[in-house]
Image (cartoon, rainbow, N blue to C red):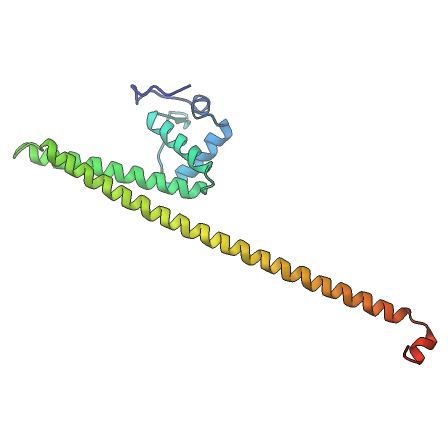
Amino acid sequence: MQPDTENENREYNTNEIADIVAIAVSTVRKYCTILEKAGYLFTKNANGYRIFKGKDVRVLTEMKNLSAKSIPLDRIADMIVLREKTSVADVATLKEKTQQNQGIQPDTVEERYKHLIELVDTLLKRQEQQEKINKELLNRLDRSAEREEQLMAAIRETLEVKRLLAITEEEKSKKGFFARLFNK
């Protein structure tokens, strides 16, 4: 079941969203809770239940896809909220500029295009920075795993040495009285 892209204002309940995004209802609730903690706002009805719209479908689908790539959910939520706030702020700024310029001169298509290109460049730079951070975190994780493996190998080696020492001590104690007496 795909969302009606022509009607962004269509409302969905939790069960419909679960079907659309192809995740369990409990997962929808979990994602929503994490997103809300990060600052994302869902529309709610009079009873306090979440009402989902087209934008929410895209956000939850993105969250599902990114979580499949083993990115922590709270990190995904932070990225989504940051992007949503940035896009809302950019739209508000664009509307404000449009209103200011209506009396003077209308924005040209070329100016809007340049502004959008700048916005895309900014978002691409942010994405590159995020990718660098993710790579660094993966490198740290790999180094940590290697260090842990080395420690485990050292522990195993120490245990083996202790076991061999215990066997040697046991063999010494098994020698008879006369063998110990004459050191044979």
